[in-house]
Image (cartoon, rainbow, N blue to C red; front, side):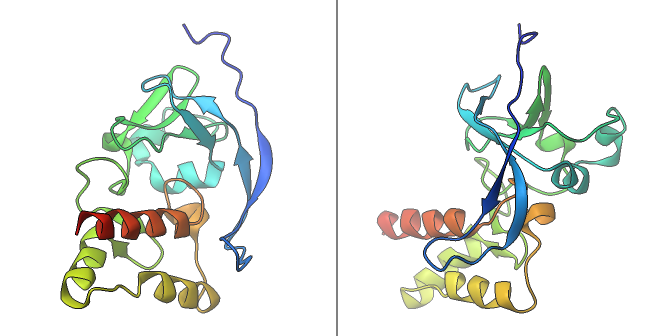
Length: 169
C-alpha cells in the first residue's frame, strides 16, 4: 500500500514565536500523511527517535533517520516511516499530546504538564508556564530535540494547552 511512499526531508529551524529564540537545531521537515489517520506529519531527527524509543523497538532498525511524528491526539501512531508504525508502547516516555496520556506533558525539558497548568489556573486564574519555560530556555537551556517526541520547541503546544483550558472555564 505504501510502496511508493517517499518521504521528503528538508531542514528547517525551530524557533519560538515573536521573540525569535532558537531552542532547537535544524530538523528534517516533511509534510507526509500518517498512514493511520491521514493527517500531515512532520519529520524528526534521528537523535530524537533514538532518544525516545525503547531499546527493544530501536533494535529493529539500523537507521533512525526518516521517521515522522503524528501529532493528531486521537491517532495511536507516534512515529512512522514507510509501513512501519510505532505507538505509545514503543516509547520510553508518555506522549503527552496523545488523548488519554497521563501525565499529559507539554514541556518535556522543564516538566510542565496539562495537570500542573490546570492546577495553577484553578488556584490563581493564571499560569506562569510560558514565562517559566522561556526563562529556563535561556538558563539552563532546553533539549527539545531529544526530550520532546515532536523533536521541536514546546511553546506552541503549551500556548495551545493554556488557551484550551481557559476556554473550558
